[in-house]
Length: 283
Image (cartoon, rainbow, N blue to C red; front, side, top):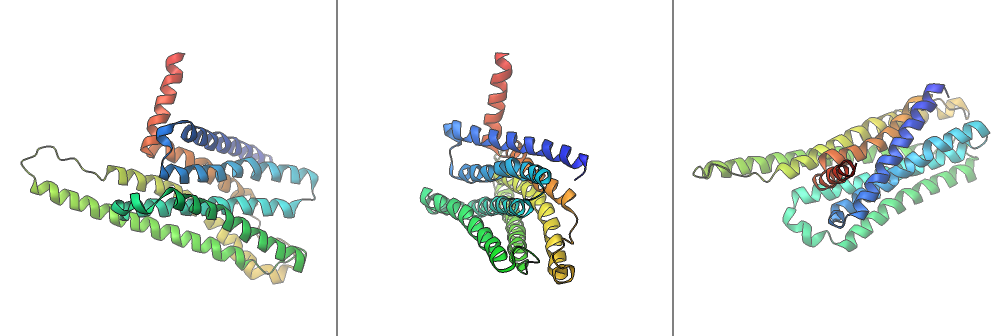
């Protein structure tokens, strides 16, 4: 790895750790932030925190030791998959809140939230461990033919996120149109408040998070297809030579998520401003 890679990687790792660590601290320390949607945000922040804590540092020490390339790839895939699964949980929860706002309170209970978060961690951990075990036991991790076991989940996650985001935009536009139609019928009231601004903020936040995620996973899908069609021809070599680019983008994806919360999640943004204002006021 070149020098610029390590400098960029370590900087992004520190930003990821600080940003997601602050998000976890802020939500857990403020009683008014302990809401159902924020439970998914904390779970995603924990997964992203470990991405920043483990991906670049483990690669750095493995590069020095020159013997733990396999375990390092397993750890990187494990936490990137966990982050992706938690993002899916967050997006599905926001989609249900936008599409069925009246059913949300009764259907999204604390028990269902706990179950969703549990499966967001258990499924990627179990799936990644099973694939890695099969590759080691059957093929000693050399020219493993189970590359499609990585490509299929990554591709399905990307498709689900795109469909959910398109559905969010459709329903927000429909709600906004209905609100405007109602406003026209109430011409005697000069100030008509629209109730779609929260939905728009949620869609913007999801758009940023999903967009960065798709860029990151787009590179992983490209690498997966290269491996799928060249594994049998390269006899154990690694034909996808783009780790200098895809690994920093992976960490960047986890680093940007806290910024999206801070600028577009209304309750977190409010508490963030209050905390920053209190710090500067004391000074």
